[in-house]
Image 1: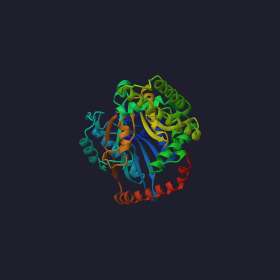
Image 2: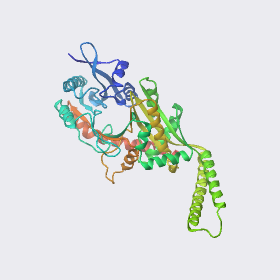
Image 3: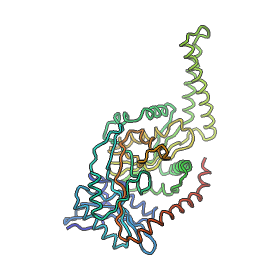
Image 4: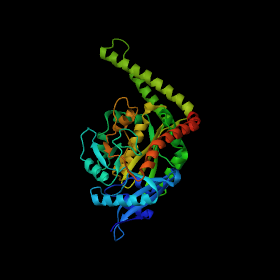
Length: 438
């Protein structure tokens, strides 16, 4: 006889973090505690246990309190179990719904970490572990309602992502990068860019870059304390980790390197005869003169930036979270200057290598789109992530188990309107912060 019970946090993480069937940072104790602190959720760490008190299935269940003592529950990327075991899925569902009803929940939402389609860097379809139709039939037979195959970011979590298999040799991973990506990483290194691992003291700089990025994309998300709290909670739990990567350009080094290259060009020009040049020699001289002109312009430009911003500028700041044997690129902020240094590319490359060196198996870029039409404003984001050669994966999507039809109707119609009002208000409140960032 299986029963549902609250699980001690350490024991819960022990079951979830490297579960062979499902494991995700959104099911971690760290995420539950973060949601409790910053998102006003009440986390429950629930496990289905057998007669020997062994956990056979588990889920982080987040309770969101609503007016009139109602609530809803959300199991982000849950449940943690083997979805091939149909009776286990049915039992887990019935126990969770019974629990939810006791708390006056109007619905329970899940969005399992189940990949239904996957394509490699050559756009060849990969074999997937689960059959889409079987999972849909199973969950609908349990009483869940599928919310559709959305194509953008309409759901709680992205329905598409890129994942890199870190068990491959690094040379193989690099070989899957696009030609453009390899060239831009090489150029970034040539310009003396550097990537450093940050500390809690760098959260403010990370936040500033996030604000710059969001202002360009016309949306505003979180305040500085949100990122600081996330960083602290994930690093205060031995089962999880958050790491800041800071992509920087040292303009002193960059200018020195360019001036050295300029001197080499001048030396080449100086040894060329002035008269009676062959056609090929004239062509070479013209090319050298063009390089000299462009390099001189670059040197003057970088000197101006050095005068305005100082010699060492952070252009990219990324936050990576780890849980079990996986890593996710959770947030990335970029400056709006010196994009031609391609520090962002170098930063991505460095944390791919970092995650592989730590023995992680999966590197998830955490979110892209399914609508690849040219008119989609997020297509640029998709194409950027695609260049790193990961598998393009599609998740099965969201399911709701409705326990109060009337209140569910009210909530799903009115809350989106309310959220839009809050977002607009929040954006106005911090616009002055965005405009004040230099």
